[in-house]
Image (tube, rainbow over all chains, first blue to last red):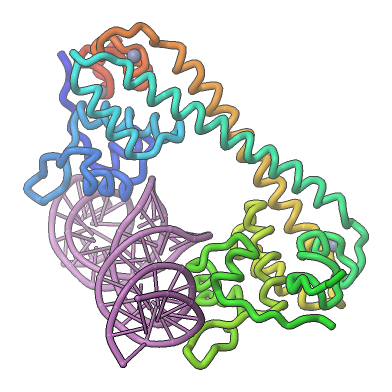
Length: 149
Length: 149
DNA sequence: CTTGACCCTATAGTCACTTCAGGGTCGATG
DNA sequence: CATCGACCCTGAAGTGACTATAGGGTCAAG
Ligand SMILES: [Zn+2]
Ligand SMILES: [Zn+2]
Ligand SMILES: [Zn+2]
Ligand SMILES: [Zn+2]
């Protein structure tokens, strides 16, 4: 008794936490197949769309790029292939996320050092933050490197 | 004796670690002022450009959006204003980075859980990863929610 | 019959660049 | 003098993953 409850695009969006425009966008780039239409040209979605879109959104929420989503969808449709490729995609994404975390932690440290530089409530002319971000001192010499011995 | 060593766009790029196209782009959106030109219409840069571009690149490397860079450049040009706004910009960016790190750490945990699900070397049909990403079981019932009491 | 929520298409905008197409300039070499 | 390669020029389009806007059509309720 699997009820075939047809869904409008808005209903599908609510069910999957996806904006209507995003669903149409996914259709345009062939992440989602074209649905049937009503007499009034409205899109009509069914169970398979819900499943597929949910899958897509979960991967996106985990930070996978759409290209990886596409690859995963292709793989998922071929039950006889080995699943090693799927595992590899997940590991790649895990490493990517770990790399991003490391990058951001370095940034965070630099920013918090920067944030403690000033705090004087003084004027821009004395701002240590601006000074820290500038190339060198305030005098006219720097890049030209014409400081002969 | 501040030597006025004029620089071509390529030389400026090398000096600041910026691609030539990016420099032209910054000029286009008025992050950098239009430089002088040679008779052959080549851009010619001097010391001030080096300083300004270095400042921009440092901020970008710290993850500030160009809008914040623009704001900071505006402030830096007004020596009499209080530097509190600068401090606030840096703190905002610090919090933004901290938020991103927290988000990514959650993702990392989910991904590493996901990554340990499978590892069977089996077939797609049995892949636990695919299963974990899918909405519910394999049977035809789910979104329709027609499971009456 | 009108209101308002929803839907349609096509197009442009977002961010911070990158890439491309199609040329021009300049110093060195033959 | 021709020509080669490294560099430079402009303007437009492409990237990712949507988001927004303009200008309409559909449909159930009151
Ligand atoms: Zn300050
Ligand atoms: Zn300098
Ligand atoms: Zn698997
Ligand atoms: Zn379902």
